[in-house]
Image 1 (cartoon, rainbow, N blue to C red):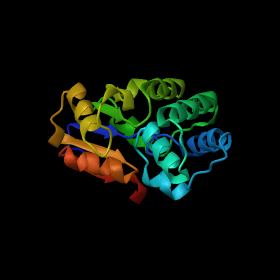
Image 2 (cartoon, rainbow, N blue to C red):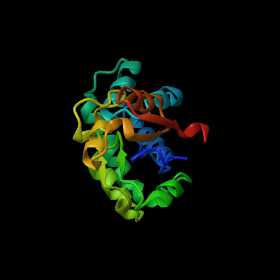
Image 3 (cartoon, rainbow, N blue to C red):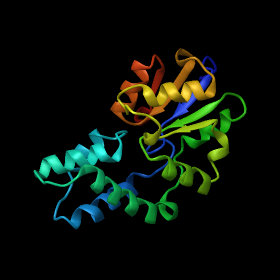
Image 4 (tube, one colour):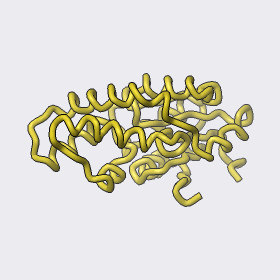
Length: 188
């Protein structure tokens, strides 16, 4: 089915790894310190965004005067404390395993690189990927194409020869703008 593509790119959170429950728990834990809550649907709409952007949206919705980067850092620390014990691969990891050695593959994620690398290594999955491009590797995050364009460059594959697997509208838009074919894994 994907034979016509020379490179495969996978979003991480919610696409190949079931990190969403852990992220929700970390947001709840972090925000409760400030007497705030989050609207789960609003957070889902921001999937694929860097943590500071989600923090900014939460702060704005509460009309609070917190620094979004500081709040994001607190949430990231909470995630780090619980991720390695709670995250499991999603069924799409079978696509990764079936294409290993046949095509270069990369991860393009809105997570920070230390978290992405730690998770992929902990789960024994890092060796499947030529490259991991994370939020701290690009200036413009999804829905901008920078993440996926850097993945293609690191794999040595032309963007139009890449297929992107995504679970978020921002990521699918980034793939489209990059000139790549996007697969909405929510429909698989």
